Image 1: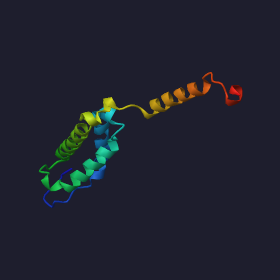
Image 2: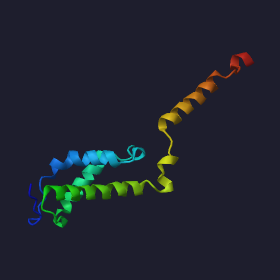
Image 3: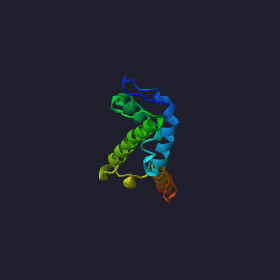
Image 4: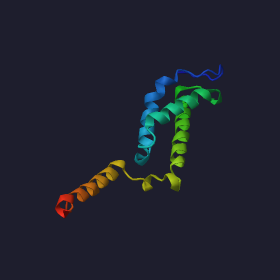
Length: 122
């Protein structure tokens, strides 16, 4: 397939979505998947590619795939940087499910504790 950037119009990029999704899923850190899905990153990549298509200098399908991969990689790096800060460190986060289970266990223990009822005190 011959690709031309001379008319500054992006070709039908939708045909590359599955290719980019596969690359994103392979490259996205599993710990970051709970924060950003591969589909979200691919969508951003498609928007960036459409917006910046005038910068594409290739002429073949292979060159277009390489350029799209570069745009995807840039977006993956942006996501990784965003969550690398200590404030947003994935390693410091706790599971909501774990917190609920601990809370429920503590509540259950308090209910089951050996306490006298108000009527027994009387």
